[in-house]
Image (cartoon, rainbow, N blue to C red; front, side, top):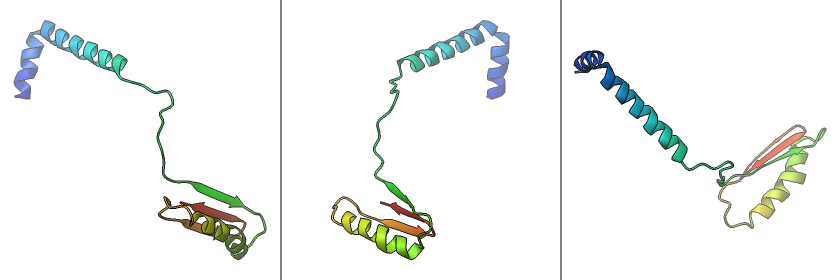
Length: 95
């Protein structure tokens, strides 16, 4: 099938040119008429809080920083999951 189409178009070069011109014109028209947004608006239901505290141990970051944030975020109804991580001098909170 493809071989016969190839042979037919190689014998009818004008038809091939017309077909290619139509493809380029229709593609260009679609590209120009496509709705565009310079800065599209979308909502990501996630936020990340990073805490940098040089010299603080993971236990101190956990008790003095992460736990108070988690307690206050527990009051918000829309938050389903809370993930926290504490490392030496660094803490990360994701919800």
